[in-house]
Length: 87
Image (tube, rainbow, N blue to C red; front, side):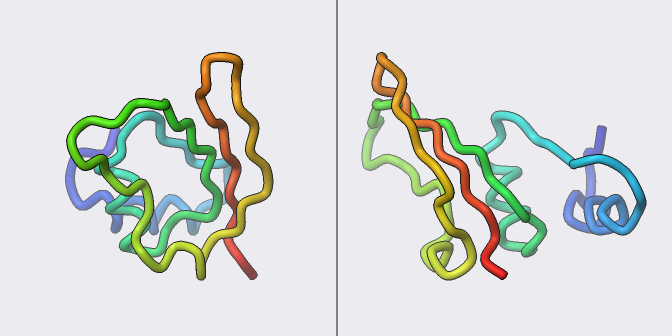
């Protein structure tokens, strides 16, 4: 569990040998990691619900950083999208 200086801790983890680093369900954390340029791949689950004005899942220039690899809709309307970092 990383509680403080998340971007610095993640940079150190990424430099080590090992498996993929995953996070689940934290829009705030993922936004911080995107701002720090530490995200290589995203699996985004979008529910068909809008509260207020809604919230953007990505920074405005994300289309320059990520490519949509696949997207599928479930019978309930949930969209499951897979994005990879452009090379």
